[in-house]
Length: 74
Image (tube, rainbow, N blue to C red; front, side, top):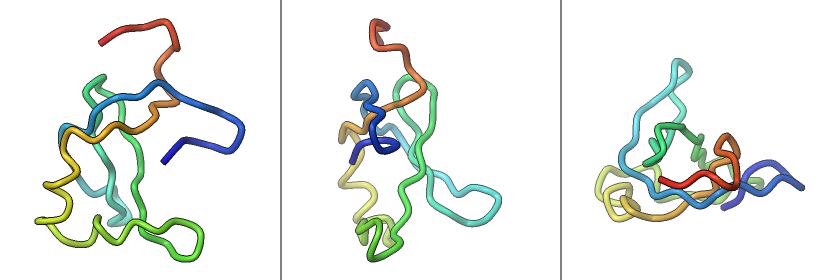
């Protein structure tokens, strides 16, 4: 699950989830940044965001943070 096409980020672990103003799921990353994790077939297949039990299983899973500078450490 990388960021924008052609733009790689730094892997950061998911530490929680919340919904944005429009009700879309957002992953809270260990670095303090966030990342949308929408289930929007056929473009984004993430059915695990729809159920709390499934989201809990993704805590600690790395996502690319495109807001972190590559050289920074957490």
